Image (tube, rainbow, N blue to C red; front, side, top):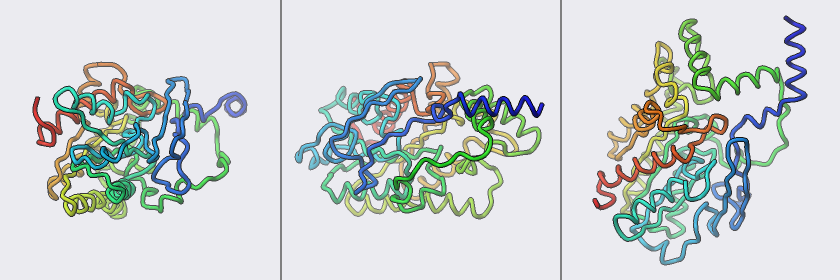
Length: 342
């Protein structure tokens, strides 16, 4: 057995590119403004799952060029969030801001939905990007913040943004390459994830263990509770900034892949798949923010087998996932009064 494991370890190190089993990062971050990309850059990304091209305008955003008149139009919408708002893994026409623009144009005169998606951030960074947009003259009266349950509550989002994206040499991989390979392969399949979660439930062990998995724990430490609440408080500060400038803030909760594909296995004596969504929704209700939870929408679509909603390796939405999310956000904005009824 030891000999076999040794052979598998050597084979994995020699023949397997583990990085190909990781999400595709979007590059070209502006070194002078870590909350934006390099203006005018275009890059095409290819993986075993997709090919997509990203282009950035003069503001360092994945969007068309905006005129001064566009920036001054209060009817437009500012959409702030992470890589799911940016539209990782799909071309421009499948991003949520672009899809929203198409839905709006079908019922009234067009509005711009500014794409302020920035991978790797969280509520502290969303707040800063929003305030920077206000200072730069974006007059949008409606602000959308996309809160991604998957990694928006990692401890790292509390660090200064430059520390997170400072160029550094590739880290030396330590430990077993075979273990890293198996862990990533397991994470790509809802079935194997379900098996792992079931084993964890039977043994009483939290086998699902990442920097952000604490948000699903039924029993959290005081430190974990404080971390979650501190990060979430930035949404309240965003509301205050919006109110001070006569704007309205709306929140959209974007579920993690495991919440949608493994809802039942992630709901047991150890974990509660919907817990972070409930807590955020309750917080938003307390401070007067209208909030849309996409978990029921995406989970129902998954149950109906409407097609893959997330890419297995990259873990971002597929075009089907982005389209479902954009439709739900559009309906939410209409029901909330931010958009007129058709």
